[in-house]
Amino acid sequence: MTIPGPPLRVAVVGAGCIGCWLGGRLAQAGAQVVLIGRRRLQEAVATDGLSLQPLSGPAVHPTPAVQRDPAFVAGADIVLITTKGSDTVAAAEEIAPHLVDHAVLVSFQNGLKNPDRLRRALPGRTIVPAMVSYNVVWAGPAAFRQATSGPLAIAQDAPPGLVAGLRAAGESVHLAADMQRVQWAKLLLNLNNAVNALSGLPLATQLGDQGYRRVLAAAMKEAWACLRAAGIEPAPIGRMRPSLAPRILPLPDWLFRVLAAPMIRIDPAARSSMADDLDRGRRTEVDDINGEVVALGAQVGVPTPINARLVELVHQAESSDRGSPRLAAQELWPVAAG
Image (cartoon, rainbow, N blue to C red):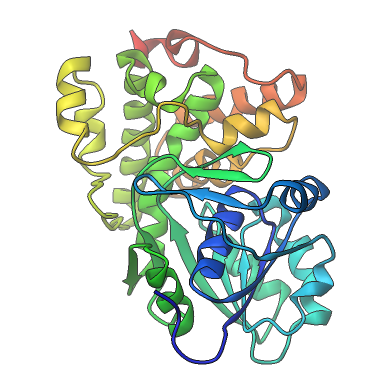
């Protein structure tokens, strides 16, 4: 199935796992796509070709262009921003001189602040918040594999061609009236990124351990207390219900598996993007995830010691530049894990 009408021109800025996945899916549906990323990606795609492996069904091999120069956003109708939050402003400043007047920028990024960062850096531009609820892993030089299940969420004012293209490629797309509620729901689930990165384990193994789940449940309970105090109600995402997680996570392993299986599928080798960042010596997004809970807690007067501890431990791991510290659950938060 392809996008009807004239070819949609799409540029993806910060093409890593999520950017290559979304850009590749749009190219699969007939869009003219350029991925703007690192030399590593450009050389790998030139040598091996791009490969995308969905959770079910055969791999697909779309053929987007791959460039390193931000100037290649020129002519794009839609620009997907898939950088990490700390790189958002710099990316916006680099592409600003090259955007056509009608270009729409769509922020497929973690955290809450990136759409506003783009609005401040690119005044007068149309900025659309969006969210990817699943995980994608870099499985080979130019191969990407969907590792968990879930839909995409995009603000209701999203360009129709973008929505049509993603759906044509087989993506489940939810149009959200209030993206802040959706972003908070995703952030609640992303609180596990720090736990996973610090454990050094695959997601399925880490979530299969009751001790790590208790740490995550305690971090989520802190976040929920902050959200209630602030009057914010996160929106459910697909089959996942963040409100249920703090009650389901601490359960015995066998019961957790029974209850969690219908809500999410996880590739056995999947890890969080934060774990990959630690292993590659890159700055993580912990301040845009667990750090947001700490900031909201300070604003509304709710203590957040567990999330503050996870932020501290991730920053320590970043500074050591030795990858994951492979901490046991009890080392993350003894009271929650015990």
